[in-house]
Structure formats: structure tokens, C-alpha cells
Length: 270
Image (cartoon, rainbow, N blue to C red; front, side, top):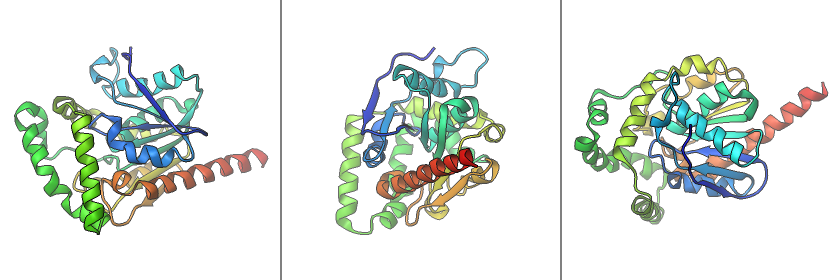
């Protein structure tokens, strides 16, 4: 059973559930939430404790249950489901197991079907209390090239870094939970679930060369594996496109949802 959690809502319009990344806190997707809320009723939350998974379930099912719980509490039969990074895998699991509640699926910078932790990072994930601080210290160096490409002006970079520092300070994360979520990825059969998705699907990613989180981990493969899925790339960004370029990311999602609704009407009329 999913434990109580706080639901955050912004905007008005068609319902859209946004699932955050491995940090687990919705605040790290605040920029995309705000961009989407100009058109949609955005529903989001911080990820629950994955240890609440029921017997016989995969660990990732605890998060899919949380999405369903949010819809139930708000009295919604279905919604567009958007997941960022690790949240993209949660969105995939939800769409695969609850097709009747998924109006559309968008996966943003999700670890691909063949992605796995690098040996060094697997050690970090097994001993987060020891190596977690080292992983955080390395982060600015891994992400430096992407931030420079996405935000070419120093003022924009400074504003971005100031905003991120504020989020890091106010929305503290659990290194042990981040590590546990990272390890869940390897146990989740993503390929099997791609065959079960029936909702219109959009796969969004940045430039593999600038993505120093999932890298060339095969995000685009989801567009090949999921029937009739669309694929879109964001230029001048890598893994952080939903944060560094939220307006462009929101525009891609909005156009996809508009097209999907039109295609549905055309199919009904045929």
C-alpha cells in the first residue's frame, strides 16, 4: 500500500502527471512543471519509499502505485503521464500496467533498455553513505559541458546555478534512496514492458555526447521498441534538457499531445 504523500498541483486544463527523477523530489523538475502549467493541470509529487512494494511486485511498482494513488485521490480516470529520467521508467511501468489510465506517455532522458550502472557507480550505489559525497562532488565536472552548451551566456549560467543551489538547500535528498532507485533500474525488464504500451508515446532526449548521466544508453531505442512512438531530440543539451531548456521541452510535449488528440479524433471519425 502506498503511504500518504503530498500532491502538488499547478495550472489548469487537461491533467498531466509529472514524475520526478532519481533525486525523488519534485522540486528538481520545478522549471518543467511551471512551463507545462501554462497549458495543463500539472500533478506532481515526491517519490515514495520504494520499500512499500507489495509481495510479488517489482520494486518499481511501488512508484507506479503512487501514480495511480494520485489519480484516485484527485478523482481522475486517466491523464497524460510524463516521466523525467528515472521517472521515465516509472511512467513506462505505469503505462504498461495501466493502459486504460494512460492518455499518453512521455519519457524524457530515460535510461535506455540496455543502460546499466558503470562499475564505479555501482560501488557508489552499494555504499552510498561512504561514496555518496564523492558522487556529488563529481557532478559539476560531469555536467559542466552540458551547462555551457545549454546556457552559453555567463549570466544565464549564474542564474541557473543559483536556482539549483536554492533547490538543493531547500529540497534535501536522501543519498541512500537515490542509490536504491539507481539499482532498481537493473532489475526492471524495460524491454518486456515496451511491448505492453498502447498509449501514444513520445521519447525526448538531448545530445548523447552531452549526456554524462545516461550517455549513449539507448534512450532512442524506446522509440523503436514502443509501437508508433515518436522521438524528439533537444539541441545544445544532454540529460538536463528538462531543466536547462524547460520551455523547449514543454513545447515538444505540448505539440505531441495536440497531435495525439487530433490523431485520436481522426481515428474515431474514420
